[in-house]
Each structure stands twice: as C-alpha cells, then as structure tokens.
Amino acid sequence: MTRLILLAFLVAAMMAVLLLAFGPTRPAFDRSATRPARPHKEDTMPATFQTIAYVVLIVLMFGVATGWLGAA
Image (cartoon, rainbow, N blue to C red; front, side, top):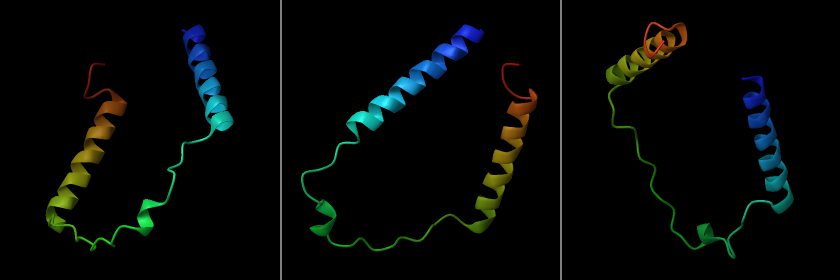
C-alpha cells in the first residue's frame, strides 16, 4: 500500500514538472475583447431550497466521512 501511495506521489510530481516545463497552452489572440459582455444572471433557486441543499450536503459529507453512509 505504501508503494502505491509513493507511486501516486511520483506520478503527480512528474505531471507538475511537465506542466511547469511546457506551460499551459494559450490562444493565438484574446477572444474576450471581441465578444460582447454577457448580462449578469441572478440565481433562480429560492433561498429555502439553497439552505436545504447545503444542509443535505453537510449531512452527506459527514455520513461518508464517518462511515455511516457509503461502502464502509
């Protein structure tokens, strides 16, 4: 198991080095200057549903982390 974790760290380090060496690809020109500005859209979900969704998310994360939910 330790070897697997060390292998994962090695692969992640190699990917980071390759990304730093070659850098992210950049577009040939900036398209944001040619596009018109988009209007800002408001969130259409009611505040009650947002609160319920956040509470359910916290309960789900707690259940998975403690083993109450999931394959543990």
